[in-house]
Image 1 (cartoon, one colour):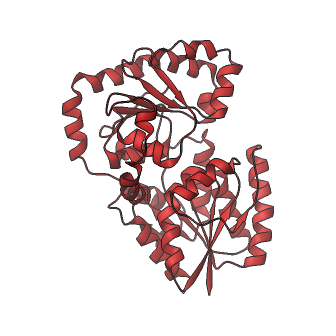
Image 2 (cartoon, rainbow, N blue to C red):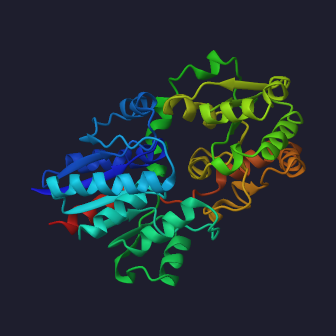
Image 3 (spheres, rainbow, N blue to C red):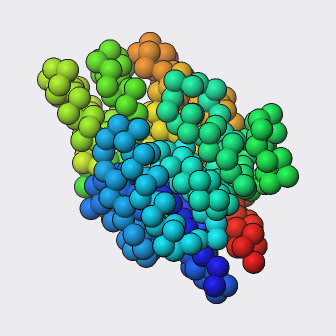
Length: 367
């Protein structure tokens, strides 16, 4: 039986890979090996996501943990090499642009095992982002590139990627969200936080270049005070620590409309976002998800590798308080009209069949 190694290390990766894993597990002609690198080392929270999405336990946890990028990727190379030598997978695949993805691609390349990159070709064209470097390098050494959009395909054709192995598939997040929206509807998170549908805003920020900046945290605090709705902020422990380190704890505590929550499970978070008025976020994944449940995103970044949503489902503001406040004001100017427009707009990331297309290609590649 042919073996397919699926490597992942963060919560966003496992969410997007959920349907692919479930479909591969049903394939009788292949054996799917789940390889968790441990890049997101809080396995307790990670395990909640796995359980909610009905996914089996990983076949191995490499236990990489935190550390510098060089440490993470270097340690992954050694541990993945050992695992690949033992299991001898016929193909390795991973999704996205994390250190786990690049580490998996490089380890597969050195072991002369074909690598399939899911979510290939997306570009911010900002090499200061570690994720952009990971994306570009991963695509260069991939045997199969599964691109989520036509723009991603065009980016790959402009590069030196294997042009005869580029496939337009759509993004698997579409079907994951569509499948789980109903299940998320059973979540009690709105009642627990005393929230009314479309009468609150969701905030997420996790990128190191943002939460490690005192100036950016101060600017978001200023902007939040100008928003009239409750702002729900599932705060990552790293963000919480940085706010305290910069002496900004009292400043955030004085924001009367800020509702700080602990990190949430996937269904609670999906229910929260799908019922929000709009979202403020520096997350790439949330930009994609919002196009499925039709919410507008104020993107707390200067650029995005998902240009398909700009002007339709999102706007770039960076951490400029004036721009954030202006974007929020524009949403409020005629919210009912915006809501109707969003509901009519097509999701730019596919038709909900990306996982099936990717599984067919990967399984077919090892037959």
